[in-house]
Length: 322
Length: 131
Image (cartoon, rainbow over all chains, first blue to last red; front, top):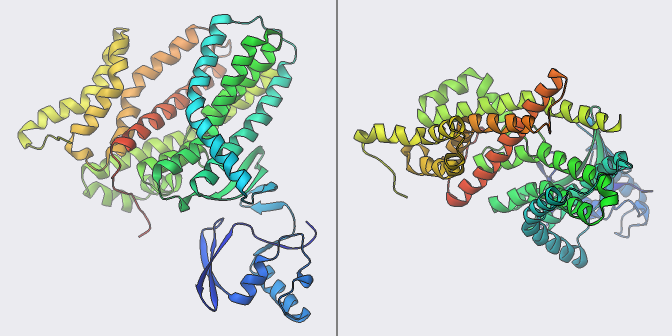
């Protein structure tokens, strides 16, 4: 990226002949922008010299606009991003095209109907045949299992998001604290159907389950690669199970938010548990209020125990290499 | 959906709401799989028939699964340890694995039954804290 690029998570809609409504999907903020600066900004794609954009603007005007956009943090100058406590690096800026949309739809339908049968068949065949395990290349199975698992996980979210009409902006890798990971930047709130949103969040876990099932099936067919594939399958099953827990930022929390109808599961349940004023109000509601308090307590207890899971997984992964 | 409304049926309502946990305890104590297999159905029945769960079916399903899943999950984890799949010589590691497995199982059960509940009862109240 040689030139500045407009933040790819901004969504423009024309408000009137003179202004655009802009929605910042990353920070969930709305603001308005003049037509000229908005149309200029939308042409900034990182590969185009701003001064070569032919909009009948003088160099001084372009410099002023760039300064304005930069001042409001609307421009980015590379693939790296610093959001919250994490450092992010963009791998793929997603731009919709017909081929990608067809691929996304095919993958989403295939994933939705195949992940469970493939996983179950994989486990059943593996347990029935129990191929002779060659202990070579076990560590390679772990590493490749994690890499392909994470990649397919994020692609699962991406393709489901594209299929159901969510705003999908980019895929990347990140480091949050000490933990590495991957992310998809998307605006799923554009999707009206709750069940479709749940499918978008669940697609990552389904991808890991599918990969685990495929690895187990291949392990039955090629026993000499049994240990390698078994380890890759185990890593993916662990990835799937970790992701369905209710920790903040994990898929399980997002799905549970949708199911319970709570906008921000972790933050809202925290408010209920620790804010006595809210708790008092809920108690006055009777049974529904008490139920909500109980749900919040359970979710918050689970929040405390999530580090145990992460700790366990780190220990398990380390012991695989020892 | 038919719901029990009369105040005189309070005993029956409480019995129905306690049915899942009863099934779970009976199944685990008697080592019988039938009550455990029937547990999801009793959970759905409990949510369907209790009046206070109306339009809040997912909230109540979450709570009922969390409570009635305790005996089943503990037995399941004990069984996994007996199979030596997750057992370790180190007590702390065994404890870690037990807690982690419990949370993962609970999360999976909550999500599966939550999705089923949402598919049956689509219109439910939304919980908002914006004001």
